[in-house]
Image 1 (tube, rainbow, N blue to C red):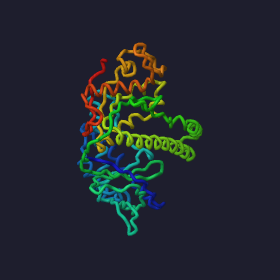
Image 2: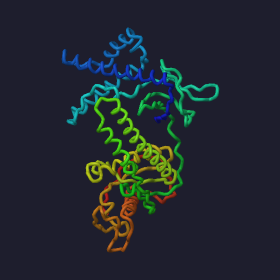
Image 3: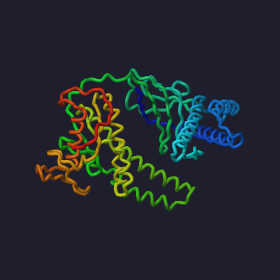
Image 4: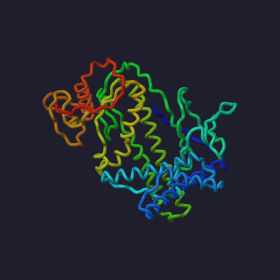
Length: 393
């Protein structure tokens, strides 16, 4: 099992300049390697492979100890592999008939990460007082906000140094043993995802939408108007762009913190969680729903729920979303209603409830029928996401 732990770095001014210099050299390697690939193809009609490029840049690194020589050799290899992956993805999309997207040269603010193999040019250390420090070759020991300890059985395999909004982070990719799945005693629940209510549960609970982006739109409008008035290429425009980026970063942090806490509560409470099998693409394509859909971050919710459920022993299943909002969860009759109608009223069984709760109950019913799941006390450990049958009620 692979997990990534991210920690904030607090470099001194000298260390920050050294880290920026490393990024600058990494960007130079990437752009020079891309230029070499283009030139070789234009001259010979054939491509150049990663091993050939590594031999060339290895010699350049040895001949330039003050510039490319500052980069760790393994880090330079990872940069060349990154370009190689970009070309492989380009040819894959080209063969599939998709928009190919040829690899592009990286500008000064478009290259913001370096990769390392742990133990080769970087290492997590602790001083005599127990304070965490992260050593980077040619930079030194950088202070780390060690907000959560690494698991005892974790093996650090890969490291990514990242710069975002003038802040530095280190991402430690860990290899962990597969978790021991225990019996989960919780009940089952169906969940309907939306933008009016973020989530509606089959037990009548509703999670309201905080609307993080809309709450900050006034500040964003001011910052973006200020940015639009600045002259391109000027120092003041760069500062205005950084202010816009900080506002967006704050909104993203609010959204991610909310989903982390909520998904943890869900997997700790329920043994089986049934969701609609939605790609959300149709909601983004709708101009009236696009902003609210992006603001809700439902894709992030699904991603966080899946990996948390794996370790909690909760099973996550997806069902076909067809007719879940139209069918009455009480009697099964199809009650057509527009999206603006927020209350489900059945003329046959007189069931009246929130339309999202009605959809959540239908999701729960389909999951129970299709999976032939027993009562809520039965163990449903062994998390997996599987698509269930369609919804002809």
